[in-house]
Length: 146
Image (cartoon, rainbow, N blue to C red):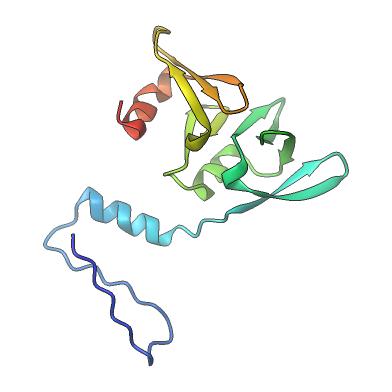
């Protein structure tokens, strides 16, 4: 794939033109990436305060008792977004859904145990062990190239 950048001082707004002989999965993914306006900050509630969380420092997002939590190395925050909303906002290169109730930061994976039948145990950087559900095993293997 060739990439060309044309600097034009008269251009008021960036324009992206994709020239191709056919629509491929790579082109479709590129278009999706261009449309995503990723927000790197999410509001997290802890006690009576609100903190702006840098999503790159979040180890995992998970739901428990009808609430969604963001967990960092040191704290847990309540997030007022649903997991499907977070999944849409988060970078697909950094975060992956591993179950119906959890999204993890790929950069926070310390190690993985593949010895479990039908699932994968994931040990995160804060020493929390979580499990990839059977439904998401093939997805995470594809993302990680396993």
